[in-house]
Image (tube, rainbow, N blue to C red):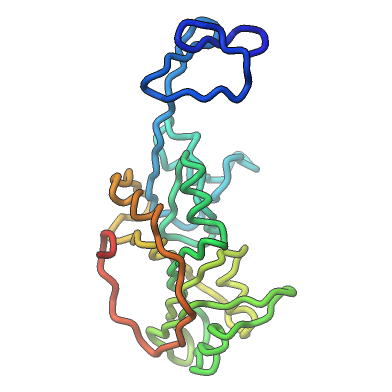
Length: 237
């Protein structure tokens, strides 16, 4: 701008911080028009084995961006799922929406289903809600629902609001249980539904609006033995 290479509405714009309105003001750099970038948010069913990263560490590493069209390689993940986790992952170029969904101060609820080794007892489920200590941190779920439990495996759904690194796996590890499979089912009002693994869809404007206004989590709820099966798709009413 100080070199006079940026023009707005036919005149040089030399002051950094100048505000323009997309669709109304004409912006040029070196004589070429600058088009406003359209905001896109995509829901992806992340399969196991893919990494939520923009940079490939090895030639064989598979990135979630490999599952998207080439023109969407600038989209970045909203939060992360580790390589061995699967389920609902949003990718976007909307920084404001990303902050709204990931910063702990907004308390957006994320729902996971975990299959763990061993039988989880009612006391262990209550401990996940009251908080367990791991790696110098206290980790807790907003709600824990035990869907099934036997001597070898348990299936548990958890609601979290903070999204710390490897949080679910660390919580169970603190109880002496290992997670065999971890799937994110829901983020705020948006559900994974019946979207197949490896497939994606562009969110509708109403869905993005619902995510922007997702209410903060209320008070923590106690552990329960069983939850009704959630609806297969869509936005909560």
